Image (cartoon, rainbow, N blue to C red; front, side):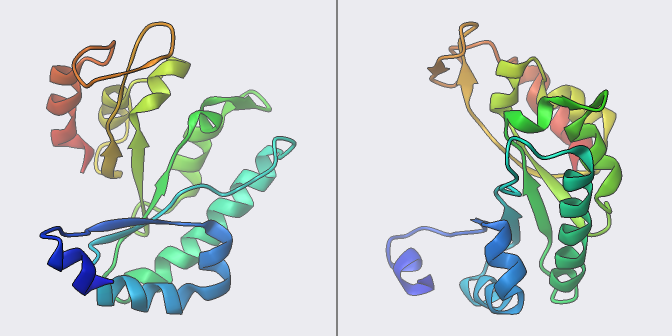
Amino acid sequence: MKRIVNDAGLTCNSCHYGFDELKQHAQERIDFAKELGLEQMVVSSFGLPKTAVLSDWKKAADDLNKLGEQSKKTGLPMGYHNHNGEFEKLEGELIYDVLLKQLDPALIKMQFQVAAITAGYKAADYFSKYPGRFISAHLSDWSAAGKVMPLGKGIVDWKEFFAATKTAE
């Protein structure tokens, strides 16, 4: 894989992994990531059902902390990628804020999905609220109606976003 990527003149510094995949094959996936030359591994989703309760999210975060501890020993940071589902409330609490409290910042960094703006949450606000907690971001722009737009043509304030990245890492 590394040869294919390099032969194409590209580099691959980050990759998404399924949560179950990592739980079942952690060391194998970590070894592959190191061989590929990744600088970070990111869990794309916990894959929890819509009926999940807050304790399910907390348990998943605890399991991810264990995976992060394992990957940290190899020098490879672990991250978590949000979707809009993390910006819903359960039991009166915003899931994303609960995750940021439950995930150990020494083991798990966050990869912010800018699409959360369609749910009313801005990356810049979270970068400022939780400095040092973010490893990367997925960039995308959106119309006020929730339609994908070319970067700079939607509602994301990119000047604010990039200014806030200075506190994110």
